Length: 392
Image (cartoon, rainbow, N blue to C red; front, side):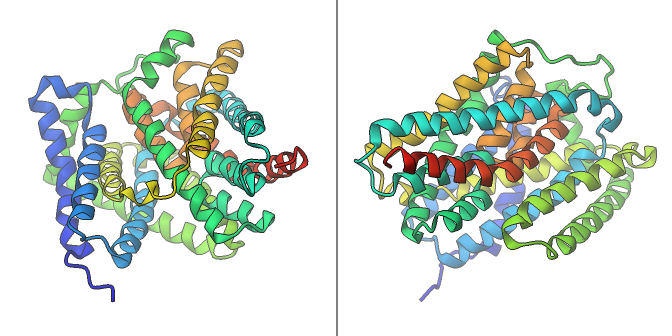
């Protein structure tokens, strides 16, 4: 019987207050300022998840509530993050971001095929695993499910791939949140930023602006922004009901992005102060919640061969993507935001943008992520058939 000692409702105050605590700590402790509240939220979330697991507080209903809330947080955050975006200025970056995303997707597919060669004949259903791995790292769970159906893979194989996906994605996210941007900037061109203060994200000023969310006059205007966001979410979810289940997530992300972009074209919406900060607060709640879902369950069926295979796909493709970006003169920020859009999917794009301190690449990353959702199914099936033809 599923009767958890701790309900999801009792954890909500912790999820909501943790970002506030992390913001306060980063403002007061200079040593933690460069780490940033996003990373701290994720770390505290992981500690929370480990504590819940050790005390046997995790249940099926708790997991289900957590997963559903993650979707709600992302849906509400994306339009808010986009309301202050310079959409017209984004068009000059759109083509470059799309090209960088194509490089990321091709890198994943190529490495998945090459890295499968040493495993031919040794791993059962390798072709299905390879195809679903490509789906995971080009568009996340919806693509994995689509490739599973297309290759007639078993549920056990699907869960196996999901476990490796969780582990490797966490390691990848740790790299993104720490040194990935600094490494990328050493090899690639800098992002071409404008100098106007409205679009530049100075880290310390950015943190201090979160306190403005509590100003009564701001709360009234932000309430209007939230109402507009709720309308966008409602329309997006409603329209997504008209498409096939396997395309639903992609459709919702696309409609949320389009809705946020359209609203950003109106000066009255763009002039609402602190919409970006409110959206980022929701992303911090998202990171806390996502971290708290970490458990050791994913490690239960690990094999060294497949662990190395998944790590090779993620980090091998990242290296190839980096080299191709250098050759094609893609800047560091565009490289990393499209890499995150591919490996971790669009919901993590705002996290990467915050880590880089560059909200100008936010819309590019979200748009690139939609390309991943659309192309991931095709790439995953193509890789699966290729590995099967090779003898996998």
